[in-house]
Image (cartoon, rainbow, N blue to C red; front, side, top):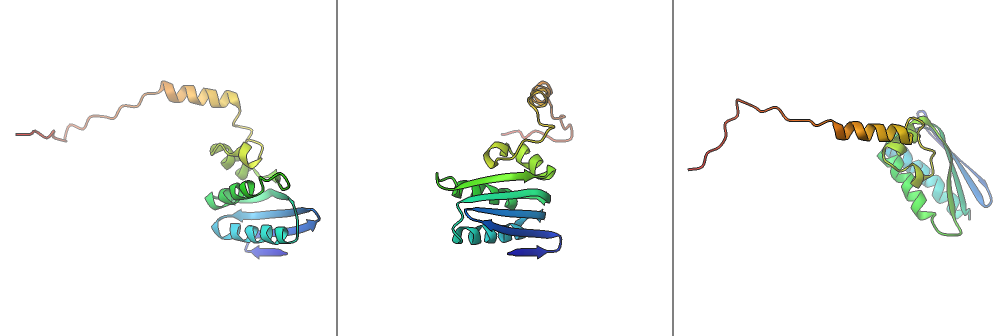
Length: 143
């Protein structure tokens, strides 16, 4: 089954016991529901392995991340598997920023290496920001 919403496409291909879902375009609140329909159709067909290809996704938001987390949680049983076989740069970047790359099964973004993370953390802890005192605000005095 295939859904097409403007530039969004979700194609389900079933090869028992594996279901392949190929997603392209924007994965947002509306289109995540269409992918969820494909997953439901695959499960009713008796598929126990789910492979999702996000290599052509151009945008992903919280609903798309929520979908991936829900799929990971619901296919956590020993007889079912969930795998992200490809992920675009925007998917990898958002999963890495949210520290969900390992949970979802996406390779971390290349710019987020351990050395970069450590350097950023050191930079963050070394900088102390002080709020400027506002001279025009009067302090309250109690009588």
